[in-house]
Amino acid sequence: MDSSWARGGPARGISAIRKALAQYVAMKPTMQLTTQRVVQVVDTALLVADWRFHGTATDGNDVLASGTSIEVARRQPDGSWRYLIDLPYGLG
Image (tube, rainbow, N blue to C red; front, side, top):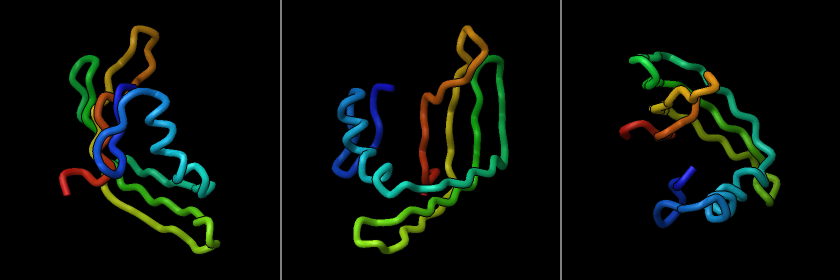
């Protein structure tokens, strides 16, 4: 992965991405993802999914979030899929 969107703009590189995502990992979240649509053309796929996030903030309060995401994935030579683009809030 080359970049991930974080507060203030994209985080580039593995180290910066880990730092940007650390606050979410610290919440020990659970996430539910329901794929609504997949459009596949050869080795590229567009996915639309509804998601819900539940975690616990450092102050003990619940953190809830939800949205509809848009992702683009590419099939790898070994048959697995990797995300190229992940927009957690879709186009909104």
